[in-house]
Length: 136
Image (cartoon, rainbow, N blue to C red):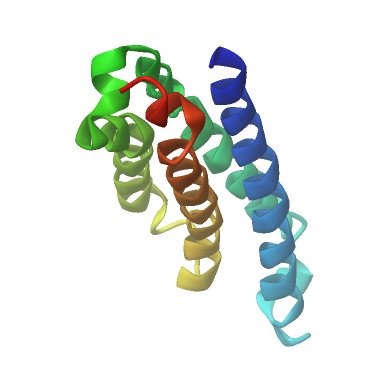
């Protein structure tokens, strides 16, 4: 089961980094040529911020290893909390601190939506897995 949880962590990190980078590229390329980013040497910093936030969110997934405990694994609430609580807190904190730096809400939401959608998929897959059904 440890390998399964590590697989969830690594796949969440990889897929969300790739998806976030791709979506940020699309948003950046849709800007008009007269936009201020053409005059700035740091126009690609949004990619670094996005990958950094995804890495912090993935580090915040460490409590999923609490699912190794039978009580946490069998309780839907505890399992949900172990998957989503710390990434949600990191998201709220970063909204307060990073809201002024990023100029567009689209760029900002693109950093979190892929992570939470992929994590939701893996959570639902984990709840339907053999680890939950066979241990009852």
